[in-house]
Length: 513
Figure (cartoon, rainbow, N blue to C red):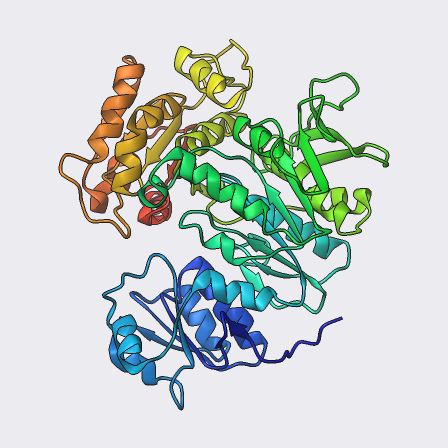
């Protein structure tokens, strides 16, 4: 076992003995700050705005500041030995410029995380979609089995509110980000790859380059390590065929998968049961080589979530945990914040929030959301089209007496909006009402002609009878959506930007007399 305190931490030969983190309030950066602090190291950091995350870090002894200023490099006595940054931090950030002027090494977030993982059995969860959920599922199941893994997740577990932890055990579970290729910093003992399809082309340039970086990632798995990889997805199935690693565990509904998922409806699989909060219990039987099949019961909906759970199950077994213990732990999984997170109900309207920001994620979540609409099943032509996109079949029955599924979508990044507008149009067509906000640019500058209207137009083109509305004013989004709702409706706010605040604002308006 590893003690709570640990020895020196170096990233690429740079000491993190006194680290200053720029953008410390972000999911990834705050996790690094938390682990460094828990290892007894002095940490400082700054963020553009105050938040509960920043306040929580300050309560743990991290020295924090709001806003970006070169003077923040002096928050730690003696100054920092390194400044840690993420991709979201621009090169002209005043703290980054000051660090370079003073000769203080600037370290990428992934390199800092890799340094914290050193000396442990690292398990990295990668893929275009499902990384956060799968990382969270594996973490919670390992904890349920009595282990105390370190972990770094790109989100917060709904049960504990934690996104990172310095554990006493020898396992370190981490979400591995491919967006800028930084997951090539890791040399894990094991890895999971959930799926693979083009994304982040603003960095990688081409679909071929994006795929190639996953091949490079697999090559970094330790000799004697393992790879868990989905064969239901075309991209990962092709990658599995190229892997030379000795220990490769495939999973999926495909009969050829070594870890076979047999969802509800297959012979011998128990029927689902309602599991609270209007969600449909997600049930499947999973067969593992050398073990008796286990029954997986999830309280989160969606075929994609069941596949994520199967991946976590397979990885846990590779780490030496009993399959039934893993299954029991996965049954207790309640989700991650911003992954189909229930925000509340007011005025008969139920509101969820979701991080989906790629067409496949949007389509999968809309399909899963149908499970919380009482007695209302997929049946519209547009919903059938979405089912085809994510590879599931749907029932042809609908019942207009029940509430509608309203999706409020905020496109993320101008580059992604421009590249995938047509695909977003198909994915969003599975909702009854679609409200599209303007683009959340994040790290990108605006592009001429690229607005949320591109997405709204694409929905109308593919689904001329759909109720599609473009609302560019983010400030009035909640009141605009409130004017559209009626009792029985389910609203999902969806996107990777600041749309996460629209749900609580909407509930407040709906609660008003």
